[in-house]
Length: 289
Image (cartoon, rainbow, N blue to C red; front, side, top):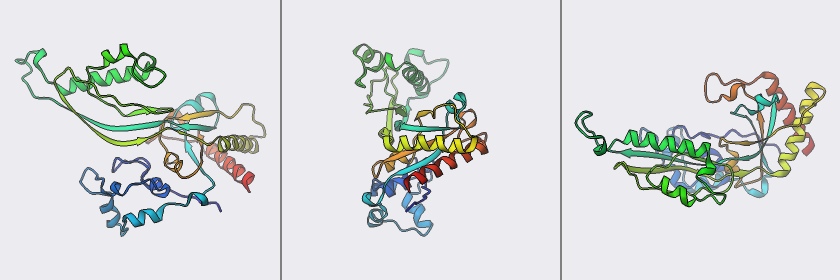
């Protein structure tokens, strides 16, 4: 049986907690998640109840799919990046999804007169945050300067980083990232609220191979010939497949988008590329029947 499903709140926009729908299906949504609030103080449970949906711990357990009943999960999504457009190919296959840790960092200082408080005595949280953000940008651009291959800070880098008490939203490709807190030299307090954690996910090699072949077949049906090999990419964005990987094997197909723009009015995909993705999925399904 082929099942098409649309999950709610993959992005976590309202409640800042991603994969709510897919996590429930995968059986990894904790009951405590129902008490997560939006900016107005409304909980997920309140929002569901307002829409005549009563959810209890028992209901959550009933939503979970039986892993034995699920063969696999495949998703089509725009790339949300510029690589496919750059290489001139309409489709790409995803080999893995970057993990991410999402945190809300709040720095607090104190007000002071701009003319009478000496610079060395100021407690400016915005300046502290700005300095930390620039440092983190440098870390992302030059990770070899801060991280060794085992994911830990090098000894010489530890001293240079130890003056900050700031943790960003961290995206990483494989393995674990150890979040380290450092003493702040700027005399501002820092509180960190962890909003989301998701380990990196490797797409199933069998599904990836079959999707790659299906993409080739779909494009061949459409154009008559395919000269280049179907690209294989990492996904830097999070997807429901991360939650579903706890339930079954997952695979993803990327569709080219203009300029790599997403979540914005200028987001655009060519009709022909959408058609190509449809033919690719059709070819994939036909090979499984």
